[in-house]
Length: 448
Image (cartoon, rainbow, N blue to C red; front, side, top):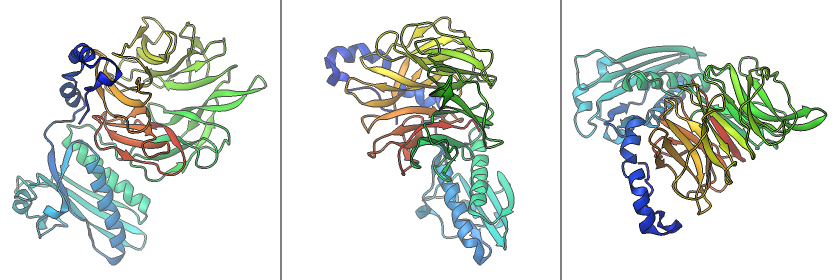
């Protein structure tokens, strides 16, 4: 449940601040949970252990079941039935499903996922169904058959696909995120390099081997490229530059290099432009270019540092960014051409960084350094300026980014002592640690 901002008194006069902030925060929980699709009545779903048809099928059946169950538990839209409540008679095909027993207490399930696996040599076949046990005579809601190789990676892919099919059916057509990936920066190999992992933290692998410093990865809207900050030669000097990595060729793609420090790239929603911070003319300002670095255009003109731009993914006309032009770093909004700049004022002291738009373009997640000195994750509904606090004093929490379903966030946190990548539902519940080795930061969720 999202935590509202009671308890501001430790930062000043409790009574005065409580009166001032009450209109801003008292209704935040309801609008936020509704707006993110959370807090509504959830379907109760049971996932039966998938039945292995051969001895060699047993390990992959266990993997498939565990991954499927984990995906559905992490979806944020379902109430999972504990296996301890399952009836004695399970099912591996529709003819074995006893709907009344599953719908009755203590399981009280609405839907049941079940099936079987056959592994013969290197050939794998999975049959999977989802049935509504409230209507025993109805055919299965979903029936799928998967064929592939007998590998853990392939079994995980099939489980993710079936989970996403279930989630899409039960969420009004919104695709699930089990097949998505997260790009991030890790220093576990000795340098800050670009890494990638599945959305649930599995299959972590190093992508770049530049042996310098990589920062701030950003997926392109079509998922074919990742823009990030790298270090390279420009005018005979080593400096921060913009790099592009192609997912199709597994190679760095050419992008023009500029004098000064160039960092924090952001894609336009149509994938034709990049906006980034550059000190090529002195103070770090925001510039936009095409995807090769050409057609360069200066966007901001202010004293101080302008950085961390993010395009509104729905409108393509609004950009949030960070600037210290007013003293402390704060989040500003502007049109994509630099006009109509506006500071997002927050109700007390401290400074805000790391803006990230939700997929619907209505919510802005960010990290806010409060007077206590801690960084925590917040979400603002931009139209009304209402704010919800998602983390509270559990380490330093920064760099949030939205999943494409708008129901999850990924972020970095030091709550376990070292800097690691975490995910959570967009109301702050179900925090889940994804990385454990080395120092990991700057997560960015793939668009699909």
